Length: 558
Ligand SMILES: Nc1ncnc2c1ncn2[C@@H]1O[C@H](COP(=O)(O)OP(=O)(O)OP(=O)(O)O)[C@@H](O)[C@H]1O
Ligand SMILES: [Mn+2]
Image (tube, rainbow, N blue to C red; front, side, top):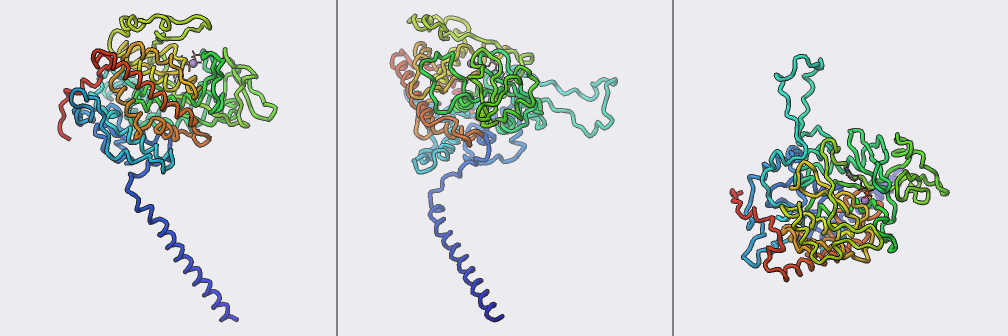
């Protein structure tokens, strides 16, 4: 009996062993063709939001591998100021960037030879898009070297560290002071919360640097940190909240009001259109892809309306508007001049509500902003046309009017027009700048909630300023051309970029028809510029050469 049992278990062991060997062989056989594929660069990891921005690559060569992780944490945490200093040593000539050429072909775009291999349709479109996005952000057009940023070009001044000897002897000091280090008030300090590092990184020309290492922690804060307070934002036409986090960071909250693929009602005037949370998120990604970096970072978040709003709010007026819907969902509507009523309540499922969270800009008491009326703003009347719709030479008069008559204001405005046309935002009646920088600064692209309302129709009137003025930054035009190439196709890089957002898990932030509309509209923008070039006496009449200063930059080798 015993012998029989031993025989049995030996047979079982033997069969198990042969099965294991067989499975190993099978696995090796299956994986063989995968390893034999041409060695594409490894896929960038997708584990977290905006990871691609967490890498530091401030040199203009862009020759680090697309998926190369940060080499050391010290490098990651170096401030944008430090990074700028670093870039100084690697300045390259325009020709090294692949932007220069003989007269006549000077706007040719050089492409890395390997980029065209991707996106052949075999792969998952998001995965393929991620490679394109990496290649795009590595392109010299996104890594144009700039001189170091002068002190007066930072929005917020850092208080100089007070030397111990200068401290008043009357000052109270902690008994255990030696164990604490003085707080380093500069943007490189690792001890600062991400929102503060974002504030300290704002300059005259952009809200954050390309490949900002602070982007990932900032997005993570917005997406995951505990909400300690939620109150209504006063002013504005539709319901929005100001959310606060334990580290004193704040965000502007806009709730989901419309399904992703729902198109704006054709009979609504643009000013009564809903604001869309996914438009806020998508606009941030589009602005970054266009190389502007003029929209404060926005992420999507599933918010528990009871735990994260009702239970923590000190805003009684808001609290009073919460109710349970007939199917048991928790809803609220707040107080505002449009759509704040039971009929237009925003509801959780049963408590989870999609929303956009945009990081707040520095408080107005620290960094005042100026609001400018758009010269091409729409008439709010249902019957009256605006001046720009009737006067054929309207742009000529704008060009002669301050601040559009000097500096980059007109081309900065065109940058904004292009962004708005691509996402079909008709609601740009005003724009803001930081008071500190006067007229010589970028335009903050705030309030994008009414973008991405329609995909089946383009709105040509948004492009009217470009059509009428025929003026565009050369760097913008070159990037737009890059985005029209299959290797970097705008819809593909947008799809990929948006896949980093936490709400992508719930549903893609932009539906496919919206992505397709981006490519179609980009084509229209480029056709408009081409028409301008054909009709102009010289190219410089149309192209504002913001790359000209680079031509004379002499490079130290390396
Ligand atoms: N990220 C931000 N940080 C700080 N302030 C912001 C931010 N986003 C918007 N604001 C401010 O909040 C105000 C209202 O925001 P927003 O324009 O998005 O709301 P709105 O209801 O659409 O306003 P309107 O109806 O006037 O268009 C704006 O005037 C802007 O100055
Ligand atoms: Mn608005």
